[in-house]
Image (cartoon, rainbow, N blue to C red):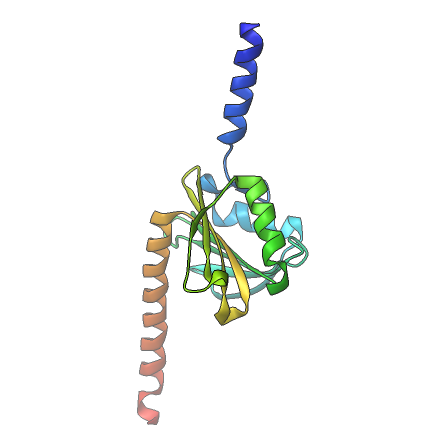
Length: 176
């Protein structure tokens, strides 16, 4: 009887502590090659590599029916996972929230100015998962992020942008 209870307790513990994965790749150990390859194998098609040093943009409708785009961000220094962000179609918001709650449990809810501005979040295995409506893109955003890496990638993105602006300025400064 004790052994049976121990086995049940262990199975419940391991189910709750499973690594957060996308496309079968644990995000805490994911890198650009493994996650990008897995996304493509799952049916996402690469749309843009405007800033390949920092992130890639995929058409994700073939991977997650409710989604339009998937952004994958990586640390430019070591290609480790920084974030994944789905843009979810506006009419799918409630259905997606139900799916996330079933998968990750009850979220922490931060109310916004309006009912539709609520921010839902989970923290699993060192990955911050957030879901909220964003009026700017007329969609909901589902984001998986490594907090430390997200800060690093934001700094790298700003640096790449400055470099490109400086190059553009240097190349055209005689023209104006």
